[in-house]
Length: 222
Image (cartoon, rainbow, N blue to C red; front, side, top):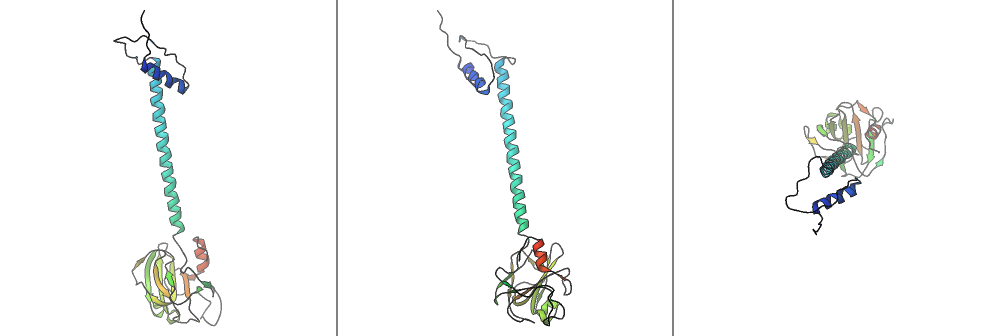
């Protein structure tokens, strides 16, 4: 009487089929030398193809998920960078004279926003750009401004910083947002230590717009 033995390969495939919910009767047979290979049209071959197809689909899905996650991370980073494109000219301050305020301190209404800060406070570029004016006499805009700096930004907007005690940049120099460009002071027509800050349409006096309103439009609260 011959002894029946289980074919390990068929048993493994049967277990795989059962796990996939595929109904197939593989059975077990008598093991003997020269057992023929499974034909391409057999149930076993069909199961193997299904497994391979499923594995390929899973690999494609995993790749798509990874690519989506990468794109999301880049978008988040870009959004964060955009939010940092503009910032305040000084970090700690008290707001004093506002834009458009009338008074005998100015030849016309106040052209900027004043930030009361101690002499020597770090003054930072509110955005990246190129220095177009820097120095005494309001950097060419008149002695009332004292030492001043004007920066041209990438969107053709200009920022101006006045009454400085020290200027740390020169015309033609590239600066980044947040970079120190000067120290605050009390030079020119000033009633006390503060930074006079303007946003302009051109580099010259007379083209100022409301700086607080502009910075708020760029996501910076003053």
